[in-house]
Image 1 (cartoon, one colour):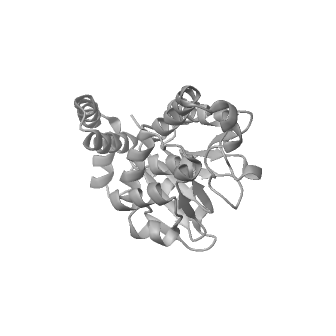
Image 2 (image 1 turned 90 degrees about the horizontal axis):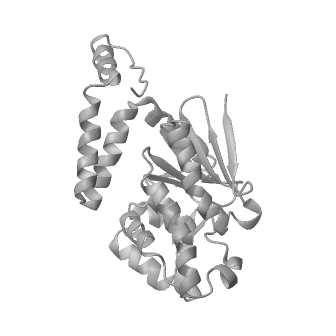
Length: 268
């Protein structure tokens, strides 16, 4: 049976299905899923609930409705919450915490995007592990159009997602990037056909959920360590990798291989 919870007065919705798949939904379709300050600050709580409390094996990140992923931050709040350097520091701390929660989530996060994926919405997608989109998806970083700077940690994610040249172009010019361009530069793993985005995201999530959870977590930690080059991240990844060899899942994987059957992993 599905389990559901909402945060930020319903602006962020989290749900768990019976097969270990979690869903994190930016739930403000009437505003093209623009995120309020409260929604930004709720993202870490929602991801923590999914990954740590509910023990999901993978998370699908989407925008509510059938139109847009997210228009990014709700600019109507900027006159009060992001009006100068002092208020911007506090506001962007909430942004950074949300990006970090996605980036550092112990289980893979799949961003499934359609329509507008702008600004901070693009930042959340760029922090995700895998990105899928349909042909309606459009990507942009409009910071230079507003006269503000994009947060440094989000720029790092953007460079990893788009590559150096496309990231520079997106930040300097504010131009939109089409779904085809995003696919060509490696930002997207796959461009889905009309009406296929949901099915493709669920199929990918199911394949990850069926894999050995400890192995997947170790792999994500190893990738993060390679990216950061931080000693503590290498140590953490090495610890997770070593722990897989004493796990019940490793024993199950060996037995299933010998018995020529599909393994059933329990994450232990």
